[in-house]
Figure 1 (cartoon, rainbow, N blue to C red):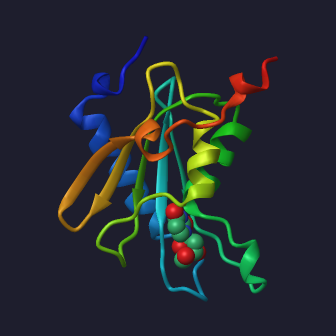
Figure 2 (cartoon, rainbow, N blue to C red):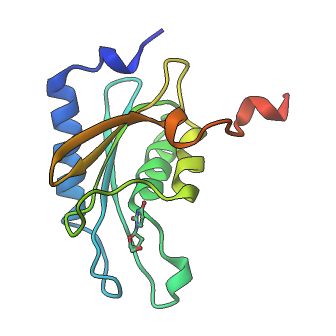
Amino acid sequence: MSEASDIDAGTRGRLVGAAREAAGRAYVPYSNFPVGAAVLTDDGSVVTGCNVENASYGLTCCAERVAAFTAAAAGHRTFRAVAVTAPAATRASPCGACRQVLREFVPAGGMLVLLDGVDGVEETDLATLLPDSFGPEDLGG
Ligand code: THU
């Protein structure tokens, strides 16, 4: 079973770098609040997303969900880590909806969460951000 601690510093740095690059592609004409996210899949792929806003504001999709859905649509099913960055903020942490979407793809070893901020990169994990969560196994299938 692969643990978050197995992810080396180089890979963590690469993931944060990918999230920062993705933030540069954010479509944020309404909030001017770009966010970038990058997920590390079980085969070592890095898949990115940025927030994409809409004139019908409620249809906006967060960076984390764009990254998660893009990775899932490419066939990935477990994410060992996710990095999130919001250059306009001191630090960014995934919203509740994104936590639940990421929860779907947590591997047995857990999902490392890297929160990029002005004071550096804070490390946590999805189980801490979303305790006592509901997941696929709760459906009992
Ligand atoms: N946003 C994200 O992309 N991720 C989050 O976790 C929080 C918020 C986006 C949505 C919206 O485009 C902008 O940030 C302001 O809320």
